[in-house]
Image 1 (cartoon, rainbow, N blue to C red):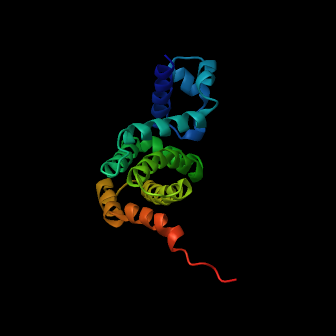
Image 2: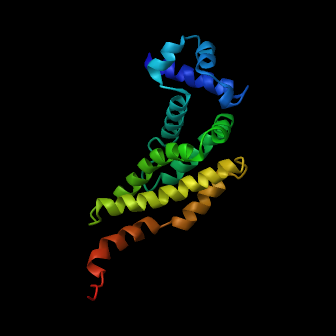
Image 3: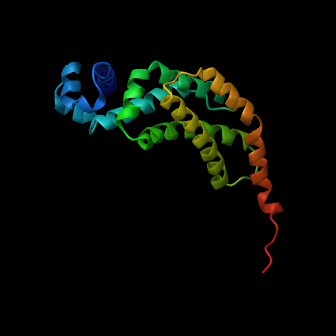
Length: 194
């Protein structure tokens, strides 16, 4: 029942965002549209921003679902772009109503999970520290989320497939090379002269 109520709250917020900006929407508006009382809203979310975070994380997780391997990461990222495009009124309104940093945080959390899965897969059998794997995943995460945010900022006009194709061309084979460099980094370090 909890998921059904959350989905109903999501639908109500998205519907209301087609009528007015986020800063004009209240919890009472959402609850009334949904046919629940305000306390039921607070049972699930602490405020509207908590609901927005949940929506972003849920939508992105559904888009990426099962696309966490080296062979499928492009499809996961493409589906993320497509999910954003399908939710354009919601994403655009949120983008213009709350801080860019907050939206980036939503996307960073989910896409990091995809990227660390790819890194772990490619690092199998290699001696690369967890810290180095996290650094590589974060590097690619910042690049991907930066591309996504720039695309949102430019009103989502460019074809997402073209962006993913360019990204794929740019980084093809680079994850493996980065892991190899980090695996060899300790053995190839030049001792410092005192």
